[in-house]
Image (cartoon, rainbow, N blue to C red; front, side):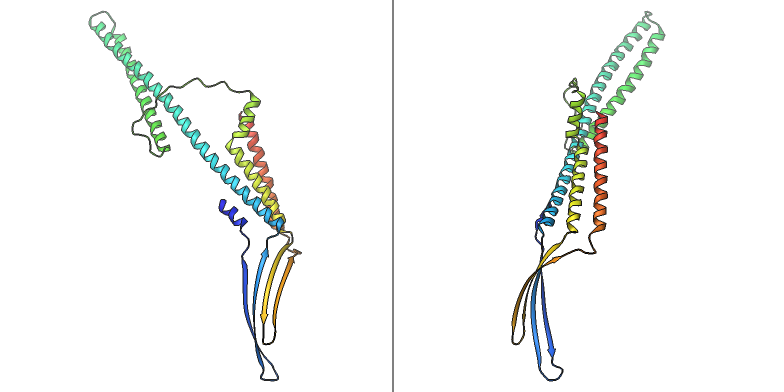
Length: 275
């Protein structure tokens, strides 16, 4: 996108034309040789040049918005994984503590049954509950291990193997009022920013296509030489579109502009509905 902006700022190239004409008189043996050199340059019309810069600038803004959205999505994924990993670690610790308690209780129950102070049914029920708790503790550890591996991959494998997160989940802050939350979501939502940038790019593209149907300027300089004369000519011309008024480009740009506006409005409503 920045390359496109730099290209839009670059003036058009100059066309060099070199030629030679050999002529012979039909009724005599006289002949002549003429040489000529010409330069032709399409002058950037101010209205078209400004529209091209605005269009390229809108393309840069769109690329920056898409990059920002990607960064925000990656950070959101990392934060979600961190929260899930903390919750999984706490759950694994709680289940492990419950498993250890049931192990001690199972041992005590077995001793009571052996001493004739307890029932066999209580011992069997404790064993069943212990097996269930061991299975849940194993699943919780596996879940925490999987979340840790996913977070390590997201970080580019920069985290040490078998790492654990320090800290505990806190109480979330109070939610803002509905209107305040809607305004914050509208101003910070990455998808909405991208949609706004696309709408602006479509608007600038439509403006650029309109200038393409406007007259354009060109300049030429020519130097010719024959046996007895030398001539230098400089001229400025104006191309006036009579038949080719860029109808196809205008229709496409208008359709893209309407579509981009509709997508922006739809995303804006989705953001408000989610809030």
